[in-house]
Length: 120
Length: 201
Image (cartoon, rainbow over all chains, first blue to last red; front, side, top):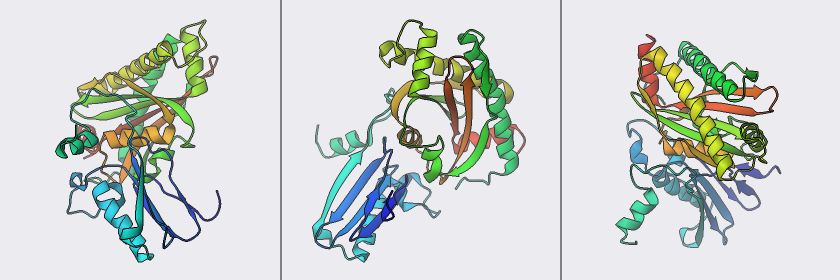
């Protein structure tokens, strides 16, 4: 890999201004969220493991990049500190595959959100 | 972080448990393959940062076949039997001579069954040693990058700890050229119970 390539591991995120490449691999059921401000040339990428930080004991410090609800605000904040503006941000999301087909005990987070939004 | 500190003594105990358990599993595989000689590395028990876990089987972008079994009951354990695609093909042709070892319905079924037998023997041994009741779920299989399979297993189990305990061993058959990895992921609650049974907590 080239020197200006940043590799984002699982439950991790990175931001970059101007020249550079940010990559992540092996998403599986994880979700990769890429944000880009093409005006100010600021990009960011998060590799998120779980949906909701409520799973985490709030009294402990925890890795915000692990959960979608905490990682996205953190990612946007870091990008803003590099000069990105919210109005310019465009997002691309990949991942979230269901590799294993388990007999479902619960409901997938995607289905839950769709149901809550009255989308069937 | 885990609710308690995991020390070297505890990792050693887990390693020994895995050694006996996987040893049993490998004996079953040997019987299945017609008493073929199988080499098994001594299991490694490590506490790894969650972020490094997807690399624990080496290059995380290599496609592999992974059979995933979750054991529930008194504790939750995840067992993952991972084969390179070449090894998967060798295993299939060995058990069903005359086939090309492709990952068609029959091939997939063979891998799942082998995963089931290996995991069953492992869980049986752990259950005998600890007195814990362990019930395996029906196995599931996925063919994907090894990193994707491991991260999916961690997400599926909602591993919220920043460090995970990984038990890993490599097995190698002498004639049929099958290299496999067995990966065991106990969750925090399982570790706590196992350690108290072993008198380490």
